[in-house]
Structures are given as structure tokens and as C-alpha cells.
Length: 81
Image (cartoon, rainbow, N blue to C red; front, side, top):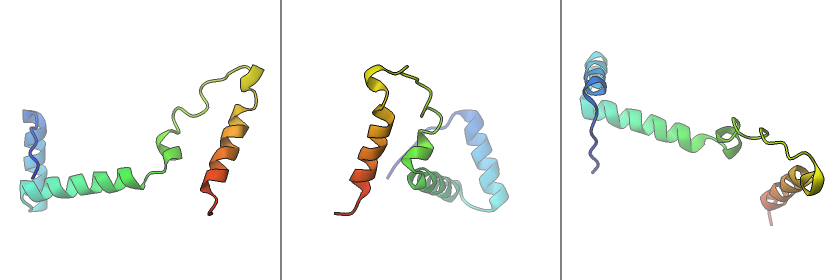
């Protein structure tokens, strides 16, 4: 059993939306939580990190080949054993 607090504005929006759907507030919130959980759990790591991957540039040096080395490591880890 979970409980949650909604600010008054969100509470009113949830009440109105549940009424429009013809469902109880509890059922409306359960479906919303299930949809959000499914969407989050179905995302790949690369999709979740897409906005930050590649924004840092090391400028060479010892880190020059680290991107390729990291990709090779991930490929190796994903191979069935």
C-alpha cells in the first residue's frame, strides 16, 4: 500500500481527468503509475543517457582511445558465454 500527497492544483487536475474517463481517482493513478513505470523500465540505458553522451571532449592524450576501448568492453560483456 502506498500513499502520496498532491499539491492542490495537481489534485484538482487528477480529479477532473478521472471524472472525464469515468474512473475512480485510485484507478486513474494506478494506470498512470503503471504506464510511467513501463515506459521507464523499457528504456535502454543508451536512450536514458542520450542527452549527455558525447558532450565531453578529452582532447586526446591518454584518453584518446578510451571511447573505443569502452565500446569494445561493452561489446565483450554482452557476448553470450
